[in-house]
Picture 1 (cartoon, rainbow, N blue to C red):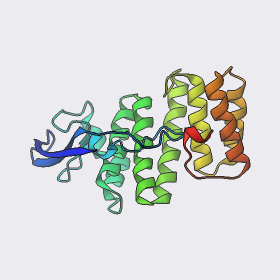
Picture 2 (cartoon, helix red, strand yellow):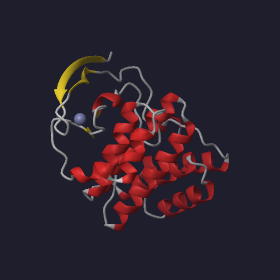
Picture 3 (cartoon, rainbow, N blue to C red):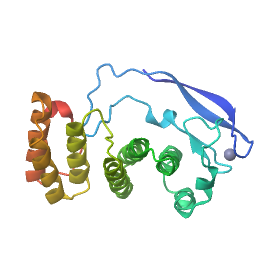
Length: 214
Ligand SMILES: [Zn+2]
């Protein structure tokens, strides 16, 4: 059971006191998960980011100052704030991704983008889900360029990349990502997941799938 409490915090950018949701506990008991791209049902992702509606500052803790406050004045950041049809927590993750990318933390920007996509999945906003997966792929690419990875292993990154490409309908690129990753000596579990991903790609399936289906 998810228990959420509302607390009040002062935004360090504009000084306004705003309500934030604090998750006291949650349980994944009896739930299915994760999906191939890492989403766990029952996890209150919306409580893991805070958003000030007064000034548009978003952070995992809005009482903490941004390392680069100038990011808030950039066009991409202002454009996110203008998107009134998306959920505040989705908007907040997209803004957090901007801060993280500016800090060179492409792994952090990757996960913030993918969480924005998951919120869109839940809200049935398919265009957003696709756009923010594309954004996540871009952040993964930038992380790889720096010699980093976004998950625990490069093989797991390959699976994530293939799944994101499949979910955005880029089936040929998804297939190439699977083929590349199969050559990197995946362990038995990842081999099973990659073969499953390959079958989904062959079936031109863009839907979310559980890892346990593999
Ligand atoms: Zn503020």
